[in-house]
Structures are given as structure tokens and as C-alpha cells.
Length: 380
Image 1 (cartoon, rainbow, N blue to C red):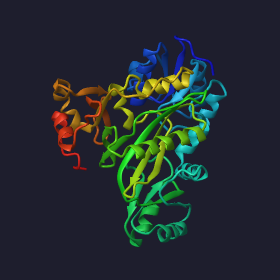
Image 2: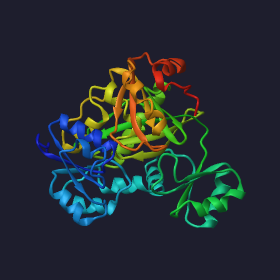
Image 3: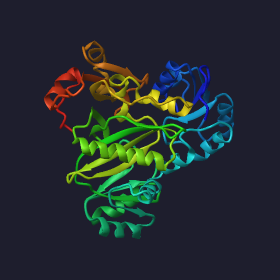
């Protein structure tokens, strides 16, 4: 792939906050962003050069969109892989449709990991009710039952404690098939953002430690507070996955750190990722610019950081009620997504807090630095 010249148009499928921040990064590099979206005033549309309004499975809208851009990427996975195939028949699409298909389906994703010797938690596919009994016997209680598609932020899953819960969980989680996952005795969850271009050049950002609240990412700490050799292994796993997928673009790789020091990949996301938002203020080139560079054929610079960082999500009406205090607080670097309705559980923005490199504080220091957003980190 040759480098796209300044003034070229980057097509982004999806109109949410990841598309918004990707469009801003594209503008910094001299590109114009054209968004395929269902919302005329959504987060990405507010900052885009142009938009095409239409459903992600509307072939007429897809063709109009593709004809208006030079290269295409996407900002979330809950779109039609068949639609991406149509787009790729008109314009280059990065990451490719086969990567989206793998990440969209947990069984396909875990099968890919097994075929490439990537460690994951024990799992079983559940196509019929009888499969669930066999999975329970193999995995033991408790275990997690998940939909294979469309689950995010804690949705589409249930923790099964004993046999009495099997029927209700199987009936309530749709569509089938499902996937059953054994519980990992994990010490923490980490993630790695990895970028790869068409020349096969790969860069990885520093490993990030993630804390969740009510099934939604709450805080990310960069760098993760894990041993250097473990961080090196996590970055190596991310590089191996990107290479095996023949990735062009950016990929988020979520992993569990087991109490015995082993790593198990949880899932992958072929796009910018919430746990990479700290890079926007702590790195010379953030995840969004790296994504744009990869899909437009530009050189990938070092994914280095100049500061340690804490990222805190702003969720729903409670956090947004503090917005005047947040933007007034020294040290809180605020990012608003432009969403009008602050519904419960909805990601409305985030803040980053920077510290000198190598000086990420402990729990009380992080809590104090968050100012009006402070609460104990273990209050999950």
C-alpha cells in the first residue's frame, strides 16, 4: 500500500467516540474524515469533514460511502462483516474483514488463539442445552456463560454458580451458540495496544493495568504495575497475534494475569480501545494517530510514553454532573465525547492525569490526583 497523500479521505465506519478521536487524529495528519453513521449529530459526525447517513447493512449507503473515500477503517465491531466485504470490493479496508469476523465471534476468536498457541482460559462452545451440562462438568463451578457475539461492558454474560442456574442462563442469553469460560484466578487484567502496517512493521504501547466497575472499564494505569519480564511477555503475545492475523491497523489485546504469573488472552479488538485513551496525553503519538498512520500507509514511529498516566472514564449522569469541577481542576486533562444524553452506564468522556515517567503513585496517590472524581481504587 502506498502512502495516502495529505487531503485524502479516510472513511470511518461508525459514529461513536472512537471515530471522533480517530477523525481528530486524521485531521492532524492532513486527512479528511468521512463517517458512515446512523446519527447525524453523533460524536464522530461533529468533527468530520463529511458523513454518510445509513445503516451498516444498507448496501446503497455502503456504496455511496465507499465511492467518497480513499481508504476505510472502522471504530467498533458490531457491524456487518458482509458489509465490510462489499466495502472492500470498492476500496481498501483495514483491518481486513477476516479479522473483524474473528473478533466478532468468541468461538472463532478462541479457536484462532488455540491454532496459534496463544494461551486463553479453559472454554467450551455451547451450541445446545446438553453442551452446557458437559461444559459445567469440564470447567467446574463457578464459570462464565457468554454470548458469542455483541456482548460488551459486562452485557451478554452470566456467572453460573451451580447447576440450578443453567436452564435460566441458557434461555436468557441469546443468540445461541454461547461460550462457557472457566474462571481464572487472576491477579489483575492488563491490555496491550499493538499497531502494524502493510510492511509488517509493528509497535506496541506500554502494558496497561485495567480496573472495572459494574462491568465497565473504570480506570487504566500506565504502565501496568507488573514485573518487567511479564510486561515483555504481554507485548510479545500482542505482536504474535497481530502477525498471525496479518493485521493492518490497530489492535487491543486484553489479558488476564493469573496468580501464578501466567498470561491468558481474554479477547481482541481490532480498533482503538478504551484502555488506550491514556496515550492521548502521555505519548508523543497516541493510539488514534498510530491507527490512522497504519491504515493510510504512513511510517509507524515509536510507541513510547513521556509520562506515566491514569485514565478515568466518565460514566453516565453521576460523573457528568461533576463536569464543571472536572474542567476547573488542575491536572485533570478532560476529553468530552459530545454525547447529549448522559444515560446510566454510558461512556461520556474520560480524564487523563499525568505523572513523571517512573513515578506512578500508589493507590492513595492516584485517588488524590483524581480530585472531584476520587474514590478508592478497590471500590469496584
